[in-house]
Amino acid sequence: MFMCRVVGSVVSLAKHPAYEGYKLLIVRRTDPEGKLISGTMVAVDAVDAGVGDWVLVTAGGGSAEDVLGFTELVPIREVVSGVIDRVNTGSK
Image (cartoon, rainbow, N blue to C red; front, top):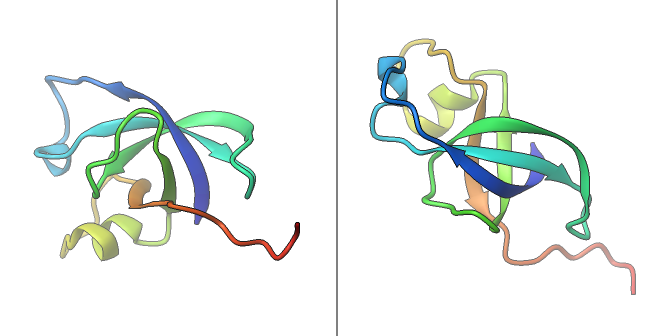
């Protein structure tokens, strides 16, 4: 799982049937304080997130099947599975 910031979206008229009905979001990994730390990836949105939202992204290992409820393997690697309200790290 990764913490990410939604930085954009992807519009695609021709796509795999598994993407039907889902938004495709451009996300960028962050550290626990929300600072952007690495490159971008495209994730399927399972929670109705939007640009600027701080989100939890589940990746690989059957994430799409588990989070989205698919019963067979689909070509989805990253899924936005939650919107982050805050992170408590124990530091001041």
